[in-house]
Length: 278
Image (tube, rainbow, N blue to C red):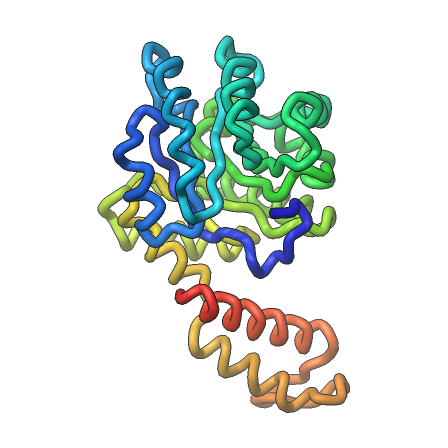
């Protein structure tokens, strides 16, 4: 997959699975998630990291786009993680605590020009560098890690802090011509109301999807980020009324070129999700 793939065909609900639990890889792949992230970092205890790398070959058999989240570049495991990924020819990398274009360039030098990177923004430095990271030719997507971000700030992961970061990531992503960023996961695994609320907040602040940490979350996230029937009906009315692209009234409101473009984008999202069986 190219880092320049169309924004309408990018994952909405990638599911993390611990790299030291290979029996869960196929379950994650069949969970309804539209991508899988095999996690060598937070989900794996330090003593298990070396053994977890030996499970990465199972990623080659999965149907969905599959990323490997390596350990951060300042850890003692990072170099060995990249070597394991490169030896297997895995091409999608999730980089935690992304802060530097130089780190991305070095990763490309090690793994090759055909890699695709999901850059996780989890620090103040990462947020300040978001525009440069998003513009990197091998970055397919930015994603937000609110827990580590709040830890780096020495603050609580409040709605206001998360909204500020997400909106900045959204602007950086679209300015670079990349898909809208992914919001961080909900840690309330069994609370579907909380998950729905978090998805709505993420949508309001410019997210294009949400990372998942449990299979039960994926269908809810995909549904939340799918245009509603009401939105699609509105978009179709706008598109039908604006065949010539001229401004006019629809449902008593004036529509012009940006609104027409928004309606057409919604219809395209709806069609793409229908084609994927959402």
